[in-house]
Image (cartoon, rainbow, N blue to C red; front, side):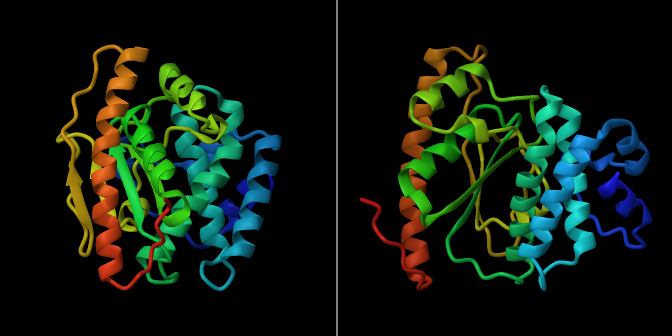
Length: 254
């Protein structure tokens, strides 16, 4: 296998620490990969790694890029309900993590605010919040979401609700909380007081202690979305003002 063979021969073991329990137990990855990665997935990951290595040429080493793609695949594969989709998602997840890492290490300059929404499962609240901010701010902000214990997929009622609002739900998937993504954020929003997320220097941290509905019904999704919408509007106004004070011009999307 192209990517797995390269990684097993690589003399360097550049890794990023994961903040969720399953990722912290990331061990014996090559042996695990030999059992789980088929040739089709390996080719998909190889293409993703090459594309990202070219994109980040001079910023990150090829070894680090390949490691990120590989670890992203293995991390997503553990919880994914549809295993056949993981290879394609791994490249997307790795790209988001690499960009966050580049921001946090000063290898790339932030051109827009970086916002991270965190909940437990990344299957409902944080996904709704991320899409709400994207609808409100458009390309004036970069938004990520993650879960401390991600579910295998978004809740069906959440997917249906977002699809009806015109969101391309084929691009949505649950993601674990990783150190690079947290460090790369300017604004971290925890959707629950249960999340242990001490802010890093320079970050703005918000804790929205939102109740989790016992049943994920359409009515409950709409209620949570309405609550999130009001909170996100207030958050975006704060971000706009603070970003402007720091002499980063943001156009009015309206």
